[in-house]
Length: 381
Image (cartoon, rainbow, N blue to C red; front, side):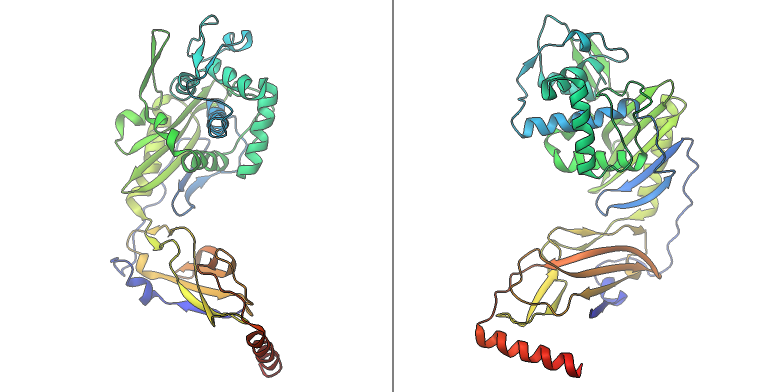
């Protein structure tokens, strides 16, 4: 397939970065069983240790419980002002609770806050039973949704995160799930930044200490059991750049907050995520055969970002490989090639490029002429 090189000199015009080699400090020592740092805009992993290790999620399970609740609301299966009664099973849940009253219905809106802010197990079971009829069936929905989202090594057996030998997640999967919540349900994401919620005359603080300490952190969820240790998925946004960190298996609420902060600050200090191309911008044109036009603009349907060490953006090299022969008709969004992005010989990303304009099929004479040209090209190269 034909290759089109987009040189560093061209990329340099996009960014005002120094050509000198950027300094990146080593990843800080993180006192956690496993950790993961992810740049949401570029989709790149900046740091990880044992990202595919199966670990006990504890209340990080509630990320999936919340995801399915948001989905049920979006699909009209639940309403925020709808009220639900806690069942005997939900009322008797162990661990953290929002202290639902079996005689007093609670709104779905309050139950969501009970799940996210107060980490209420009683709220989780109440929502799970409303959505699926039983917590057992809800767990099946959790696993089905997990597969759809690409969670490769996670398995859920309940809505709360209470210990179960059969339940496990990975830090890489948790990062993907957190990212999906932010992307798919932005209208609900603000709930993760609520610092305190009062229900049934009982006020409980959000256990995510970074909400009180770091103005850039606006979520997401804590978890703890004696066997799992102290876990935290945290998300920060600085200058429209979002980082997601996951730490599991730490020894205290203070340690999980400190170690998460280390990761987020390291990623923000030593890396940047410039925009490579705007959505629907034609990066290049490639030849089209048997069409009403001789070429088509190719690029991406969404903004494209790349994460590099601060100061290295001007060193990026890009190579576009187009599919040839490209035969009309061409639809907008049709994959027409691949873009490889490298930095100092290291491949950072390979992404499919698509047509950003449609090309209709030529008339019979145009198609016949290009058929002859392709035949001639095939024989004589």
